Length: 290
Image (cartoon, rainbow, N blue to C red; front, side):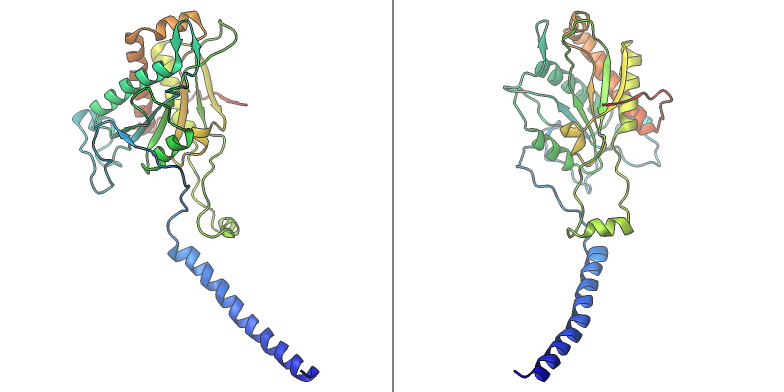
């Protein structure tokens, strides 16, 4: 090939690249902005969703009719009641904290079942990540929550300390949310131009539950804390993890062993959820970042 023909070919390729490549880029941008509406889904191992009713999970087209008690907690003109995903911590071979004759996995399950019953009575749709003494992987718990868009996620645990005198209730929310970016990898650049909607990290939800539990049970409030615990860090919707007492504290362990006290605790958790849904803004939020 002569030098003249080579230069002519390069010139044609240059013109072609100058026209085709921008068109491809504009096409991808248009797809990203106008056609790619759904976010990328995080892939998790399949997990059974345990509904409190024992029936298939309701879809947005089959809303659950609220009871009169639920109507009293939500404005008639307001949005429908969200699904509450209740997560009893630990389970199966994972006992969690142990002390003073108690196992955390048993307390969390019992409390969660009580919360579930009270929420159902109030007209809420609920989902339990487990309703028996089985172990559910953390990724599966997150997948169960993400299967209910618009839900509130409440993980129930109990605390432990090397010092028996430590007591009180504390509630965690996400320091940051690890949610997938939508579309192509270069959507990071698009998110700078078109910022995504802010993610609710659960701070106000944590504050409402913290205040309700500490006030109604008359226990020490250790405040709300932001920490990247797996189940609150990876869930898309507002999520909190509440630890309403120390198994390692003899006094609190004695209270937690009483069914009546656990019933009061469950009622306080429900009260905190209702406070959040009413839009309450606790004035005494104490943030402790670790």
